[in-house]
Image (cartoon, rainbow, N blue to C red):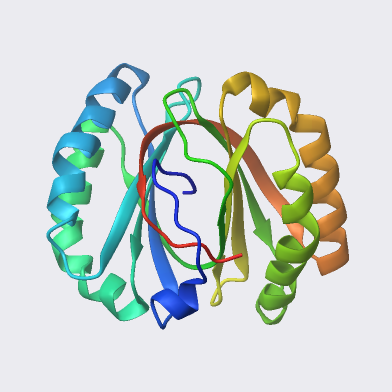
Length: 225
């Protein structure tokens, strides 16, 4: 949902001329199938999606303790994301079959994307799901961009961060990538304080917070901070 092995400095609306969108697929996988699923997403899903118009990139996060996997594809526009739906569906279903779970799909607008350093093997991600009134999503994104992000960026081992919103549901997802599990764990208390202050200011509720291994990192979304 956040990081990759590539770095781009520039403003997304100047580079692309439109907003960037993402489709996330959450699968509650069998733990014994995780490595096979990761290999399939890296070796089969990613090359297949690269053939589609408007495709920007793909990431996959995995929680080996719970079996939860989240694969996120990014698209140059909402139209490109919607146009890909029929072609992506059989690819997604095959991945879910290999992982041994059913797929839950959500679509997002990427409001913030910031990279400080490229990722590498061992990188991890903390994601928080938030809920607010749909009319306050832009306010919530601004609070994240102006208040939370500078503090997150100062945490040891920080690599990158993103903030995605769904204007129809009022949901948002904030994600921060760290260079290692140790760095991510070290940041837990500070991250909770930053999150609590930001959501209180913007009138949002925290629905869930989870930590993941970044298993596939090819999400080529430009800088949007």
